[in-house]
Length: 202
Ligand code: GAR
Image (cartoon, rainbow, N blue to C red):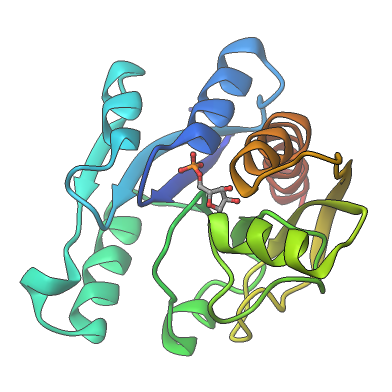
């Protein structure tokens, strides 16, 4: 029997962070855990195609179709239970999870956020908006953070961070791409490996 942590990745969009995890699994950087399931709240997320191409099971859970936050979260929890999931990775998952959900998995949910927390984070700060805010403020350094998820949006314990310099002619789009390439795609797989290894060593 495999002794790897069983990982579910929750996505909403393009899924480049999911791809970084798949690539890390294939190269052996991620070896203490294995991605068993990809769940999307968006049926047209390209991340679903990335998962299918890698032979990973996928599931779409629509809040709209289910009618409430409670039913939406219950459907996700049922899928996590059915698949014996140990670690939940939020990789560009653009839906806030309630305390009922987060408290059911203490130190088991990992999120990647595209800034150096505690800057430019919390409610309303997601995707491109984070980079717009960093440029508007005029900071010279930004980056990415991987952290555990608790009931406070972007407020859980930090696992890894990586800084990225802001360049003179950066736009939100160029900055987003560079933060992904230089920070997110590196620290997310590293953090997931770290947490998987720690869990299996318990
Ligand atoms: C990533 O930059 C991720 O850090 C961010 O959304 C993007 C998703 O890209 N997440 C948040 O802003 C969460 N607060 P991806 O779908 O290509 O991985």
